[in-house]
Amino acid sequence: MSKMGPGVVVTGLTLGALAVVSLLAFQANGAQDRAGGARPTPSATSSGPAASAAPSASATPTVPALPTTSGSGTRVVYSVGSHYVWLVDPKKNPQVVAAYPVTPGSVEPTPGSYPVYSRTPSTTGTDGRQIEHVVRFAQQNGVVFGFSAALDGATPTTDPKAKTGGIRSSRQDGQLLWDFAPNGTRVIVVA
Image (tube, rainbow, N blue to C red; front, top):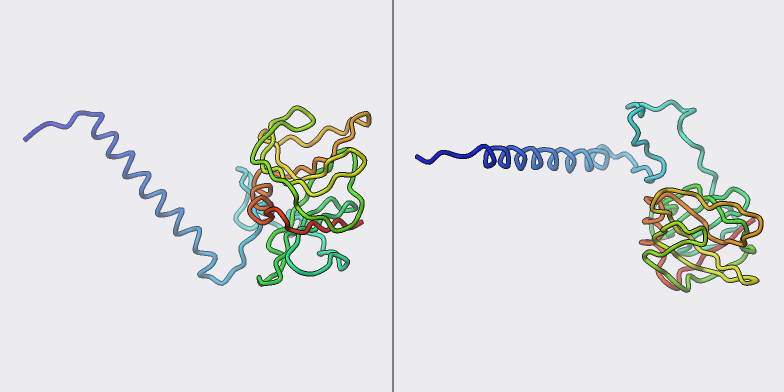
């Protein structure tokens, strides 16, 4: 019988632990669906160490209702008044598949309907930060408007001298919008 070295034992134990953790994560991910509960949007979940199993009502952020002036059909809705984004798909139940807060640049787009005309997986923002999931939908007076997420989580700096139209979200919410809004998707900007 051959002897196993300590490296083989450690590797085996590590692989076994990863398999168990993966199985538990998979089971936990589907537990809420099996219980009939609705899945929260990524920005509504808490991942910090202080998160409790049962958050209080005051700890849950209030999501503004989808504006009634947001039109119909599949669309991204952006409110310049509340700085909120809604991803709406009338084929889904509920129709609002995600809603989350954003931080605008120094200039806001004019209310109206715009098509997504350009997407870039990653680039440098006008503030010099590395950004990802850039979804552009309008150009007005030399300012380009689009959604993005900074890799370091930074929000745009509001330098009054610089005209920036970048609308930043968390990386998780930026991924949702990227997956939801290919070129041609309507972006409805409301007051």
